[in-house]
Image 1 (tube, one colour):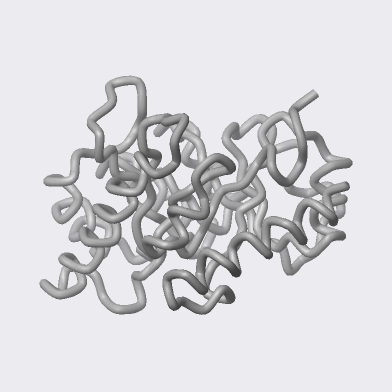
Image 2 (cartoon, rainbow, N blue to C red):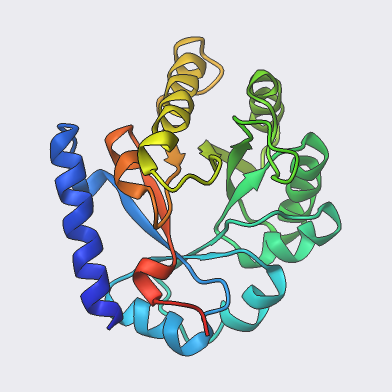
Length: 228
């Protein structure tokens, strides 16, 4: 089932990319594995998934080292508490949800202790929803400059979660804003051209996100089916 779902998702991405005159190969799928368990994760990897996204550190501890391929990346896509930065630095290739300079500093310190570099994305709360993590748009530049000064973190780009809408078209302005923010930061020199990642779009709205420039789409139920 997962292999069939993945084929359909890739076809949908390809059509969305074509509409936006983009290369579909520039869009990577992050399998959002919350509550799925080892067997489904391993099935997804066997089907061709190369990025597994975890929302919870305790799930990742159990599943990251479960005999998976060395070619697979593990991304933290849920909120990360500062006191768990040490374990996160050991487990994840990329942490997509950095939204605080103190968290960034803690991660950098732990990465230095582990002698490894970890990729990070800045999570931006564009709608200023109080129940969601992420920093306001006007604080991104300051955090980006802070992260660039931390030698064991590699700033890769930006991430956002727009408000939930029944109509994915209503999420499109938020995806466009994140792309415009990246372009603004790149043009001002705060972010380099290599810091291009835009993690945005989920099962309900990833096609709109692709049309607006997403490079990473976080897909859960469309790939795995409903959580048990």
